[in-house]
Image (cartoon, rainbow, N blue to C red):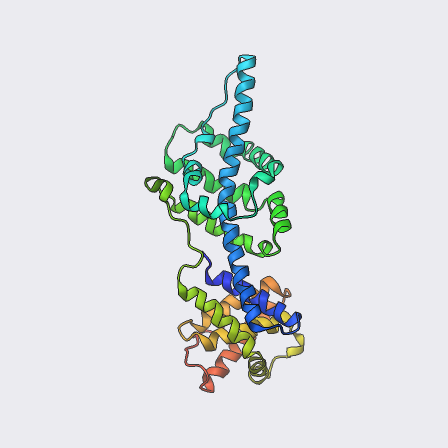
Length: 313
């Protein structure tokens, strides 16, 4: 689950913090990096568990409504949503149960959020369409949760506020983690029942090693990389750059020089987006131009054996 986009995000955050905190020990900083990444995986498990928790709340509300209907001799509500096949499969999932048992955050501690989110779901057009749809199969059950997650859970102020109160890490992680939760929903297959595999914390040891090597290279060679910025960018005024821009370019140079298999264009584009996200409104343009100049300088001086794209970024 933890991909290179998330790793780069974390390394930008942790490298900036490393310098702001007064050059702490690199080994300690590396442990903090991997702890931060593990918290992103925790969030993935917690957000998958939210589907189960909301379904349980739906069941509670259904029981109340059914009892009332029987007392008043009125039509009973449909149980379709509480027996949604995707939600039931998640509840039975052995891997999710094991991983969720290790989480300190439990949705049962936030009943008011569950009630509010379920009400938002029950009042949605997607819910109405689902409850009245004559098609009753696994694909339909899976699709309704994909839609509900995208429209109600992803950008939910109550959920976001709760998560922020539980962990400072999760505010920056949620957008990426949400995308992986939706991918997981789409990958679920009814025939796998309780043994459906969730995404692993790391797809491979290569990604774990990418995180370690990039973080160490960016910090241990930081002075050299900042000197390169001055040498390669004589036509650029470094004083116009925010400190975060310097950090972002320092990490980008580390990636260019440490990972020969990653194309220059990929590296530059990734760090342009990080500059837009973490720095000033103009930072994307500055970082774009400077990294292009730095990459060409490194190639021209034999420091980097990579090809530049035909058109400048």
